Length: 124
Image (cartoon, rainbow, N blue to C red; front, side, top):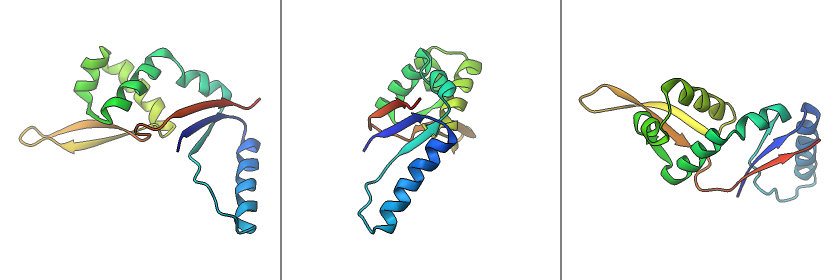
């Protein structure tokens, strides 16, 4: 299965949902879909080189501690947090805190797509 990021309007999203509803009504077997609809302008935001490099790194690691990610990407906390916030808005990463025995807690970043292919499609 692939993760699809589709650029489109709200009406594109509802048209897709309507197709799925028709399949359900016809009692057809549904194929799992992992589609995230975004505004075309946001698609450009996600495709920035720093963010694609981050996605590629997370594809290999799957789950990484924030401090390790920051040093591996050679990024400042502000820029890394900004990119992670954007990627988490589109459900490409999950950010949570995990106990760090004897040292409190640390921030962990986990990819939500694993090693699945991510397709970017624009509907204009």
